[in-house]
Image (tube, rainbow, N blue to C red; front, side, top):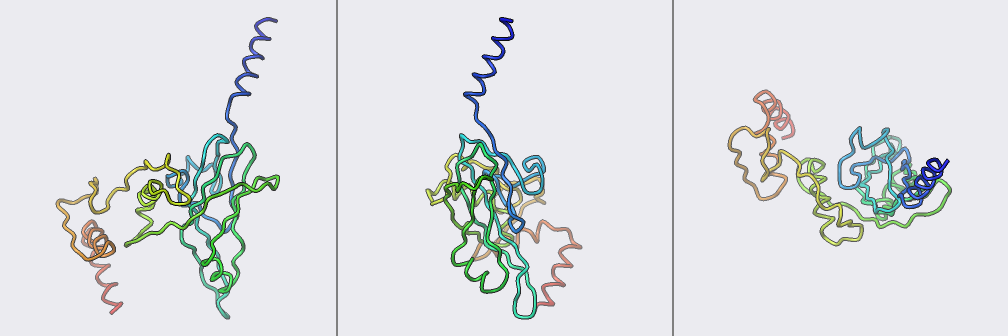
Length: 219
């Protein structure tokens, strides 16, 4: 009996001092681009749109709103700029959502004021800090974690300094990579041009030829 009582007391003590986790899900029109400074992976996301948060930590997601909207008599794809959302974890499950964007008017308004809602499943609003993640260059998504790391050291509105240390993306100018094929020299007046040259040199001959054929057709 004494052993059982001691075990129950220990369990109660651990429960009283432990941090509790909630599960975060998103509305159907939201895509997670980064979670706590890292790109989502199968192991990080329990499903396509959920992950755990700890109630004792600040968390940060980068999301993008994607909708098929009406454009006159046609339909077109709307994708928002990456939006950074920082918030305190919760013991309750949390839902991150964006308003429905149905037409060009909605899309224009959202671009002017991109607002993401964060609530517990019981309906309580969770305070957030939000900002737009500015990206530059060719294929900017390749550098997302690096750009986010820089953002988190900047003191910007939604920055979380503890998440500043992230992995350096491979195969970008200025960084070494196993994919490198000998010495790569890039020139150009802007990042987009330099990255375009870099990726072209990384490709095999057949891919380079297809790219050149495609480029010629754009003239």
